[in-house]
Image (cartoon, rainbow, N blue to C red; front, side, top):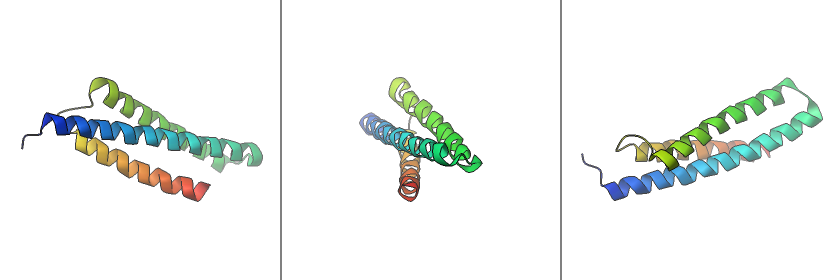
Length: 99
């Protein structure tokens, strides 16, 4: 199945936009977890900080790869967009529960 190049570019753009949203959510979560750690000083909060920072690192590298290297192989734009959308939904739920 051939993928139209215009469709492919749009899916990469959508994946990048959602990736930027993921980075924003992770920065917000990291701030909240850091503030909570300052008040409580628990290992659980420290674990949440590391968890958020590693997800942030993954999201930054993936989004930079999409933006500056054109993503990955042809046909992978839709998969990247779906992956980023699932992560965005999960992080939104986590932020809602954390806030």
